[in-house]
Image 1 (cartoon, rainbow, N blue to C red):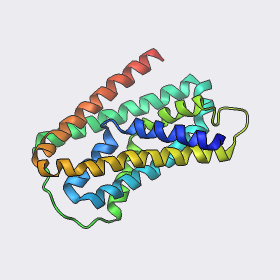
Image 2 (image 1 turned 45 degrees about the horizontal axis):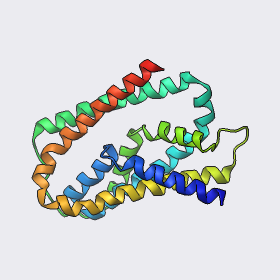
Image 3 (image 1 turned 30 degrees about the vertical axis):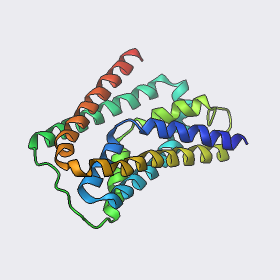
Image 4 (image 1 turned 180 degrees about the vertical axis):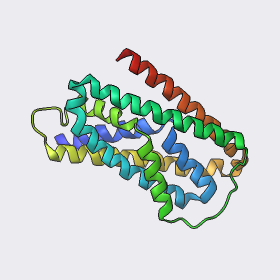
Length: 207
């Protein structure tokens, strides 16, 4: 019963955490527009597999991060650099105005690796899952309960995939507006990176 409760809470926390437009889910949507739904599904699967690893890392680091503000500051600064690089990249891509041509490429393992790479660059889930793990007392005590850690990580990955899958389904509504989506998606992503940079700077200052 305790594991079931842990799974449900973590599942919905992950689902809701990924649901707002962000780096990973916008990449899934853009992949659907460019390469089709199946490729979008592969990107979602690849990203979810990385979230599984990130959730494990978050639990294992939870006790140290809560006890050591220095470690927390290091993670924030690393995230700041990544968000700056990604923001510049998306802004440059938006300025190129090349658009996205709708094609029917055959989905392959490259889409999975693409999802894994994008999810790996997105470091925000680690502190997010650290906070959840601390709230649920997973990996924060003196000893590790591995069955809880596994339940936590699997729920985080499944919840993430569910949220990303909703973007694959949403593709039907944007499929006929490819040009408009292509024109503004990179600007949106650049703006999102700017917001994340500002938030991270505020968190670093407050820390």
